[in-house]
Image 1 (tube, rainbow over the protein chains, first blue to last red):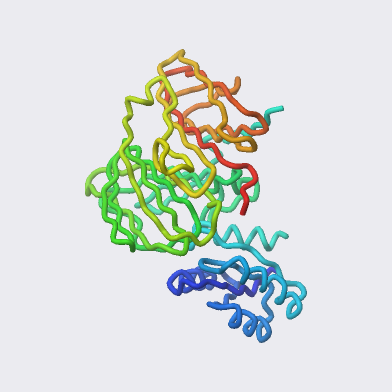
Image 2: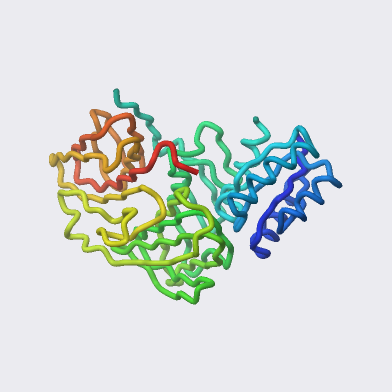
Length: 100
Length: 240
């Protein structure tokens, strides 16, 4: 997973835009944004996503639903929770996920 | 048996943007060290100096308890909940970012640096309603004793946050010793030396060194010089 394709699920439009912009600044990293479970499942079926970031506003039951459903679409997919809403922790979270 | 980890000041990361010099105890931004990610629920401890008139423009946060402790100068705070305030030494500021908040922090003075600690803790609850608070601390209460400045309880001394964490600050004259009893089983304490030299459980620490202590329920502190310390007690295995 050296060139991660990251699905960011976040219900705060401003924070979602910020996270996508920050990920796109990194060479080889791609990001796609979703604001709902339905949108996340739709994107995951169309794009070879290998990492999912749960951001602001995603409810526990929605997170559990996606942790259950997305691996059937992408068996190698990993999940992480994003904290902080900006650049402070984002790169470390992704790098930790890449390191397994 | 108590476990410890020593973080010497010189091993911290440094981000120097000209207007901001930030010494980072844990991985932050472009500074990534897989050996230095966190201490329990303590994720960020940045020792920041902001040049006169400069600052952090409006930017978002979510799901993080963010505590600022001014050390020198003044910071002007504004946020998306219409809070507008100035914080200065002797005060403490807290933001529960929760579902999302925008804020800016600028050095209020054009010709003086502003120095402050920026501390981030993982919350014990995600997606809470954002909140902001700041209070003035009676610094006389921290002379030769530990003064609580943060807790999980809204009715307790200091500010409160969504985490089973307690912060204490103390200024000690040379030779004075004290003892700290952990507030909650399973917590650890990150002792950060603001000024001077101190001995914690027999380990000598100098200015801006830190010692993390866990798997015990107390620790001892002895001031080797006039000193000032910050104790950050956090869960070592946070719930989320």
